[in-house]
Length: 153
Image (cartoon, rainbow, N blue to C red):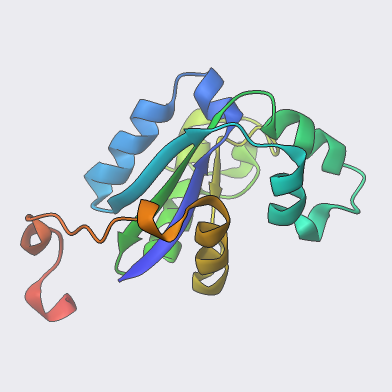
């Protein structure tokens, strides 16, 4: 099964959306194998958003992502990266369809409540950035047969 990194951004924490987002993750059937709250700093943001460091809006990213704690999670499931990105919706909440996390809970392109890994390869890198190997559990719920058909596993 694939793994993906999810970050509930300060905009989700400050607005009290963490429980609702986590509930939707669990209701979908994605398996949470690691979760922790942390305060990000500029160093980890420079690494995480290395592709954006030279952009004029990068200082805004640092300001917003350090303004409050975040909740980092590792999710597991078949096609977990694509499934969670579909649940998330487009980056700009104003363009996200109702039913997606951003479509239901945000109006911004930057205060967009969640980060979702964009590929399996990047998910592996991002998980290592935010979690030590021993923090990610090898956990499979007992109800797996109710999440997937036998031929999918």
